[in-house]
Length: 352
Image (cartoon, rainbow, N blue to C red; front, side):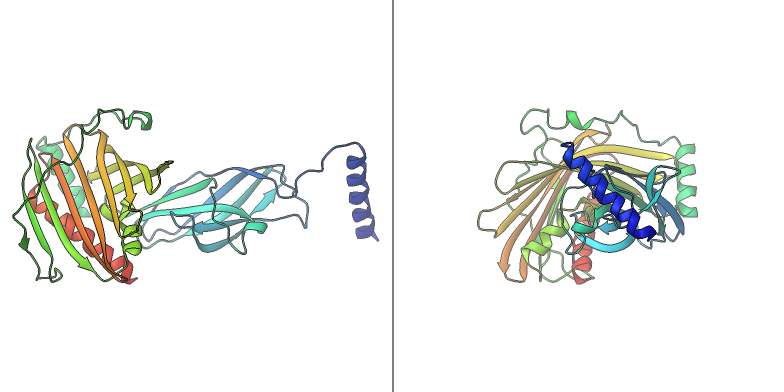
């Protein structure tokens, strides 16, 4: 009887609102923000993180549409279901405890999704919580940091350039314009795939350049998805990235801003910003990804690169990596190892 009276009361209230010309409160509500007190955990660290949401006009009555916490990829695709959010009348807030014990460094992305968009899962622009997972520095890292500090080899830092300043430099001011007309040599063997070739040397105008070309047995779409993610080109042990997509109206063109934060040694942080662009040919047989430093660390005088992909078959892609840099802390061997590391990471990720 009590349940009957309660339901009858709700129905009567809705009829009164409609009679007065007012719309009833939305059952689903509008998600305004997702937040947490902590957004950093370390590898193998067991931690409970409280995720909170601000949801305007959300019904908290039993039987109303529920809100769910899910983990997604950087592209917004569903990864795993965490659970529903609870509502605290005392705190007047929605929340959920998230248990983390991650094994690999990187970034984890979480979104809050209503029941109506959960099954099937709807990929769309939503407020997102990003949690960084870092590896703890080793004893050797600490000793190196102390030694560098004692001998006075600290890298110079400059103020962080705001995102609004990116792209204000004159055209071609940072472009990779080194011409590679000859000098390619076979570098296959000793862990390097057959047919891999490379060339490197001094850069016109100062600094150095390095290029590497190989063939992988994966589709051009699979390769592009991996290389378009800056995480796969950086050292996850000491690098944190903040990535922001930039809207573009050009057909086949995409762009993003990347804030790079590197901690080469304990208590030392180096920061710079990069602009990434991707160009897909109309046929889909060629893709070019370009990146360049757009502000930040002054000792990194010049830094840019590109990755050219060419379809050779349904599951065969030619990959060419090029990079040039002007910095006292980077050598040709460093660049060669970095580019081979990018290829190794690419193949390892695609193998799963």
